[in-house]
Image (cartoon, rainbow, N blue to C red; front, side):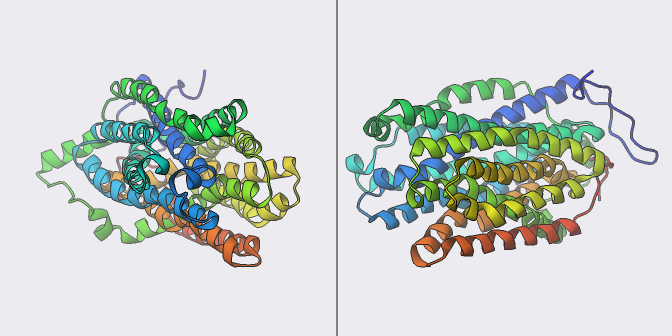
Length: 450
């Protein structure tokens, strides 16, 4: 019998357990959440890769080469800037009116913004209007993802039985590397079978326009998901006791230390992810001279290798705890951060694939643990908002600036690889310290307030 269909084990003595979970509902939540996550990150992954390769010439041709790359990475960062705002708005709504309703809206908003990017005119056709619209749509993408990414984690974790919360979160986390893999396959295929002229003219639009089909499937699946037991119970308790719901952003007032720790614990994963999948592409193509199809293929292999790591991380955290597993992932990230650029500079392609894969595996081990780890750190009434702030602020502070900072460092210093390596290692150290200060509650019910 598989782990997903095995009977829910009783909670340890003295530990409160919620009413029995419906296995079909739990599994449906996992499928819906994973598909939605894959859709969201597919669009983000495609944009991240193209922002390092093609978009500088399509949307910023009036700039010199270096300035165009900086401007393209800046528009990439616009989506990251919008994520905390989306996390705040949708997190507050999700804690107030329910996870399911909010997540339906974020899915549609993200999908529509992506399709519109695929329809955008370039600078050659619309002038300054083209990059302006690109920034607006990137902002909407990020705004939606800010509510979607952690909201779906809360939905899945709250539907999961106590002893499988890590596993369910780990399965959900595969949505990101699956999306990266699918994006790499799509871009590699287009780059291989289209001429550079055709790819620049229309081929890059294909992945964004595919969002129409993905969106339709995602909405169909998500409509079948029920609201979570934890949210229903919290609503019932509030109604029975006549206690008003927590106000929006109450988590900042009541749990500021927890929010800060969540932000810092996720700093390394947020920063190293974009170094590995966005700036590394630019470095390999612009600095080391690899062809686009080669670098897309490298990311494809690395992402495929990292997919099982998310499930492994989630399942391992059910056995040994969230903190130990999270620290294991951070250790892998530290090794990758310290050796990535020296290995890529060696021009050894298999070794370059291996080090990018190690970085992504470390990130996926933490990602597979993160959904349950963050959810368990917060009470039900603040869980969506607090988790969203933890992830999105980490992305804004430690993730969004990385491609821009990296490009600036390499353009203005004589040893950019050393500087970026030091930054990456510093962020990993910050995350290790923050993780050590978070509580361990992997055996407790989510219905227990703390």
